[in-house]
Image (cartoon, rainbow, N blue to C red; front, side, top):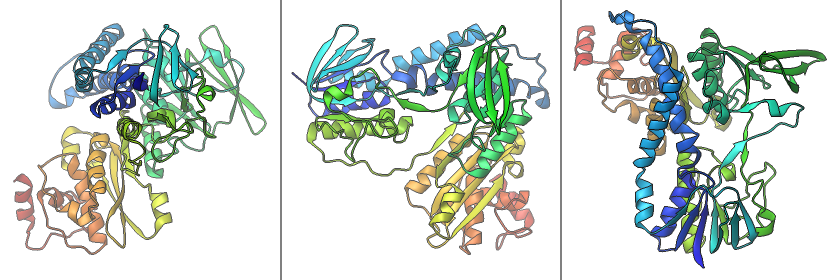
Length: 498
């Protein structure tokens, strides 16, 4: 009998198989589709390739500002899809985890179809495999949530949107979370007329209030219709030109229609056909696999990792989960999952990213200070003409430690990664502000915000070129009109060039 079976070949499954084998366990990995899972084949990698095309279209339209004469960009969508496939194949060919897994002797079964438990230690697949193991790790990920409304079958998922073979003339995106906004932003850039419909009072409910407001404003300015708090969905129906969504609010009925309706209303565990009850595995109230701090399910020999647990549905979290679940499956429950710094963001236009506490949640924890630096007040964003957006840093007023960072604008996702490192390292705002950086950079915006927070807390800061930039440009990194001690205005300009 095999020691460990890993079900699912996404980030969690890959790391679970690698870790289990590395610990000496005889390991088998079985995956419904191709190795790499959603992240490689239907998630961040292909989506990032599509968003890169959207970015290039935007950038091409800016070339005239820099004296470069080009014609209006024209999208060849079929060629773009071929490029996306090239990217996915190239990434797949260079996945270091696959090479390591193969070297460790893991048996990989791809395209096995649906997997179900025949008994607590045995799985069978629609492709005819029957596998047994002492320990099993469930890494099957998630699927788009379905709504129990008439005509739901006429809608598409965000995964369907990525598989379109042509750009639709119009699109409804139902759901204003990260997935929905990525679909809306990309296809708006490709020429679709897009409407976002969100039942809640605002899009991006998980985000900082200022981030949600700024993204909504930017989307509207780009031509996307954003309808928040629109009511309750009653039904969908097929029309001659596409799909119509009927809804009601306050006794009044309304409708919206487009060539395509994309549902992005949440994510649930992909376990419906697995027969988990046969194995003694229970789901929680949200429909995800219930796990303890060791990622052990209600069946002590079965573990779960990644999106299927409903914890933090991000690729880095899935990778960490896979490692923890495999370690505990092989060695016993010795490694608990701990709270980790988890940055997130979306490659929309504009980008947005966040890490740590929102301002609203931070205020509930105690005294805080916030510092905001606008993108139109920093050198690099002016050079690149990417002046929309801001960086907000939230710090504890008593300890001066960074509690959160929220960014909207060009390279927001990259800026937030730097903030995540600072938070994970327990840095104070004055420590972060004192780090010397190359000039001019987007990351310098974060350091300007940290310097502003440090000034509000009365903390001394060792001034660097990127901080003097804040004074020179007149943003909030220093008090209005102030020049760091010993630095004249001429000296400040000289420091920036260094």
